[in-house]
Length: 141
Image (cartoon, rainbow, N blue to C red):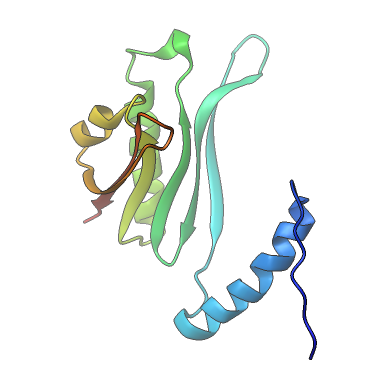
């Protein structure tokens, strides 16, 4: 078989999936079906019903990954972030997850996650330049 490498800036989602599919097949052959499931908790404006924040994540290989957590400015200081995290952890427990992991920037909310029992397991310096990307995990009982 003859192959070549082609570069493309800003590939489409379909093109990304073309790369992902053989990787998913390989991973499934080595580690089994990860039983991937996306989930979200939406924070909506009660007047307009517009989404103004929330939590988006995925369960894969019995670990829950929190991809996005946004607490709208008007709801800060009212335990909205804590409630979203508790709801995600409860969802992860219902799915029999080993734990929850996430990443955040040093200028976002690392102390918030530590306060909720998350332990650091890595960091990437200068991402973005002058800052750190921090990785946290919490084992569930």
